[in-house]
Image (cartoon, rainbow, N blue to C red):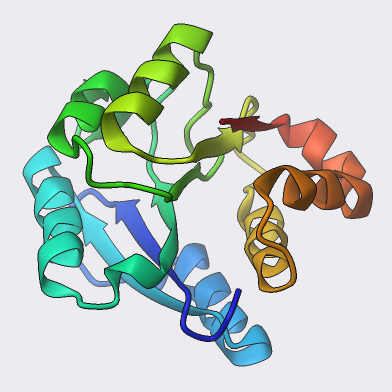
Length: 186
């Protein structure tokens, strides 16, 4: 990633009024200090909060075109996310952001298993304009994807082709990619 490219991270929390420094925040800070990768971090606890955060990014941040990765850290499984005990399908999310994610990569941490059918992927990509969705097919209570996420993001500094990035990620971190079942839909 060039120094003018950013990661926008949205992490689901139980209550946005409670401020805590999560593992995600610490890893994003490390990326900034060690590799110069800039990120914006926000929390949300409702679908309205998610929509508001992404809309603020879309309409209020003049650098939005520089955000290559939208990083979601939230629970869920398969084709849905969970915010405050409510489940929302990725189709619902796609419709909220119809045409607004052109060229973006949406990456899900392994707090949520990402398991999509070909039709679900195509619908999401077609509706949002995103170029890819990535995430993991396995979740473990004891192993988070944060270190692999950090490695994935850092590969964008040197390469623009998402397929080559994923190939290099598998070459460098094969065991962890296999354990967490890294997935790319494009």
